[in-house]
Length: 636
Image (cartoon, rainbow, N blue to C red; front, side, top):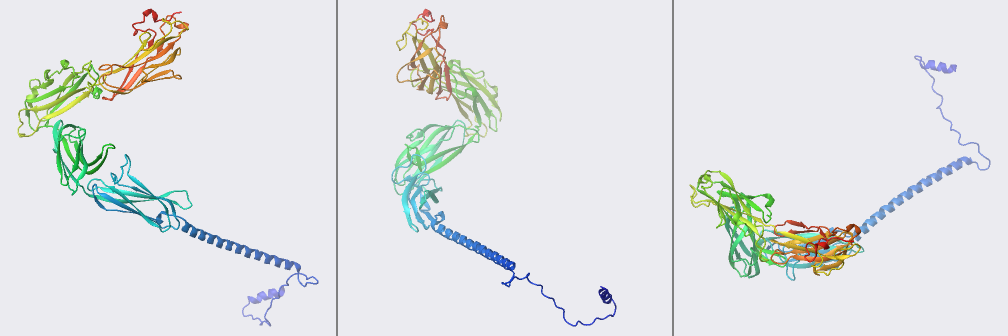
């Protein structure tokens, strides 16, 4: 310890020196293992540890090798599966589908579309169908076009092998207007081999209409005022070198247009002309006259069409068309008519219609000696009772006139001046119905505002304003329910007056009438009390009468009732039989046989829903003249 301290002192002492080492220092190896046993010459524990280390290393190597080989196997299997799947699957991208045809056509031309298709997959396609949808308005070369929906053809191809290409042709006549783009579509439906699912691929093709075989033009005034009569001229000419067969021409009128006449006369209705065969270069003219009404600045469009019309299906295949229009203007001397909303759609017989006539000077100058005239028409009007507080009524000519004598302002009407007058027009309570043709009555007024003195600067200019207003007359719908015993169509039995606990049968008769208009959807219904039995007897046999025992309701489904029923022809009637077994509580009373019955239906001319309810039918048979009053009430 002392030497160590001395050494430390020498280390920090200045100028002190040390002798060189006599030899390099060495380390002695540590002893390995413990005591050795006799015989083996090695330690057994050390050998066991070495064996465990080798076993663990081998297990790690085996696990790593197993994982590596498994990963390689999975990757290989996935690659192999994807390869097989690519070779065994079907994709739309590997199906070639194309429509070939002309890019431009003439209307009515026969066109051939060629649909080409090829299977670029590695497996066959089963149950292959080609569906071809022609452009809208196309007509088949053979057979008939469908009555509704698009015109399609389906061709069954069957099996399509890998790399096999085929084609199908489709023929049709195409129609449209010049400049239209027509679209044809095709679908290839298929089922992959060993699959039950069906798939499809679609393709389309466009065709432009560049020429029409028939030229059409329509001419008319550029503008018109309400109530003005206008002339529409339609010209047509064939531009083909061959004849066109079964050609028709029609004109679609706008709302507010009323047809008056045409030259030549229409073949059907007021707007269809069957032209028949039109030769090459053939031409023609149609002149139509009518009146037009509408609001100021409203455009009215007229469309003239030439082509083939299937009248059975009303399908139109057009060669060409033309559209013309005019604009409604306020008349320089404008007139309009207002009607109360409550009667705008229909007036009841016996009531009246009040027409409010509005007038206005739209001229930039004054109008002198203006006249307002209203002409009435319609056999349903009670002309003897027409009234106007300010106008002069000419009953012989059925008109009301206002002049400067009645309205001093009419002597000199300033620009922008306006006013209103009224006419009260009564409707007959009993309409003049003598035959079944006497139906659909209308109350009509035609008004005109004019001057016989031409306004300054308007020589040759039409200044008169005209308008028309009308109201339809609603039918008189009648329904009666009656009880009978001796006067009915059935032979009734049982005591009269009715006795307690004894059944007496009665006839119930229902009748319907309709005066001016046809009725549709007409039915009548009522219910039976608990002590009244349905006897299952009805007359006549052709009428639809039913009884529901659960609801105890009787229903007569009358359906359509023609105008004039009960007026120009007998009322529509039906009868059924019921039985009453009164109780002691009914003694001295007239028990109910049928509840109040209600009949309802729709007036086809006015659209009104009509309904009538009858009185309750009891044993008080006041409608049977053969039954005495002392036979009404129940006795013991």
